[in-house]
Length: 178
Image (cartoon, rainbow, N blue to C red; front, side, top):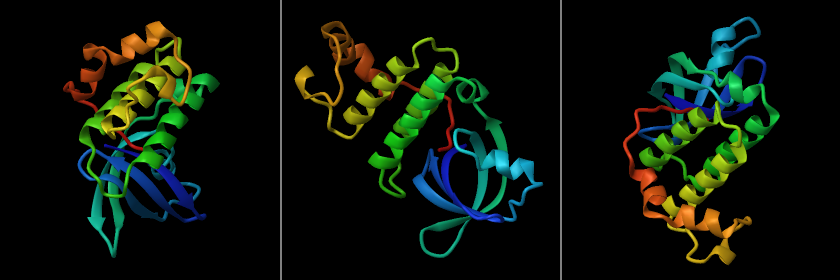
C-alpha cells in the first residue's frame, strides 16, 4: 500500500507515492480518463492503495494494477481533519528524499491517519506526528523553546517521555499512500 500526491493531465498522472519498502517514489499512471473511477480513486491524495508497479526509465515507475484499501472519507468530510492530514503528507514530502526507505515513518503515517479518522483533536495528532518525524530525522529538539510550534509544559513532557518516543518503533500492521 502507498500514499500519493500528483502532477496530472487529462489522461496521465505522475504520482509521488510514499511506499513502505522504497520510501517516496514517482509513478506514471496512464489512461486515467474521466470515466475510469477506479484509477481516479487509486491516484487521489489521501488514499491508501496497493500498487503493482514496473520499473521504468530513470527514477520513474509504471503503474500496472492496483486496489484501493482505504479512502479516508472521514478525513475528507471534516475540514480540520483534512487540513491536518494534508499537513502530515506535506511534512513527509518535504522531509523524505526520493527512494529513501523509511518503513517506521510509513507505518507511523498510516497509524496516525487511521487514528485521525475518529479523533476529536486532529491538530494534537499532527503535532505528535510532527515531533516524531523530527525525532526520526535526528532533528528532535532538546529544549521546548527550540520547537517550531508552541507546546505547553505538560505537552512537552508527554512528547519527551519514553513511551511517546518509543511509539515510532512499535510494530504496526498498516500501509499508506501519499
